[in-house]
Figure 1: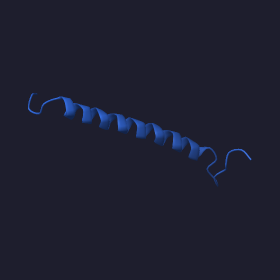
Figure 2: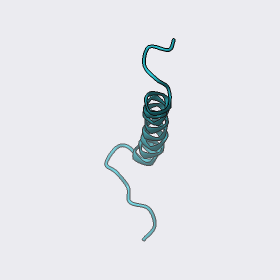
Figure 3: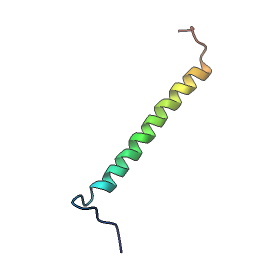
Figure 4: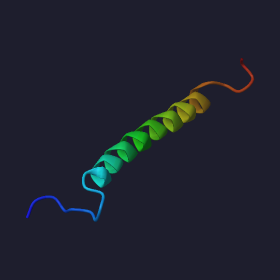
Length: 46
């Protein structure tokens, strides 16, 4: 049993999954900040 082995890429697929999770989290934070900025600040006040 244990972790599945990927043909020729041992250890690379789980690392790629962790990196993609981190990138997805950062992108979602950036989009949330843009949404909050547009929601709470009046346009044309800058």
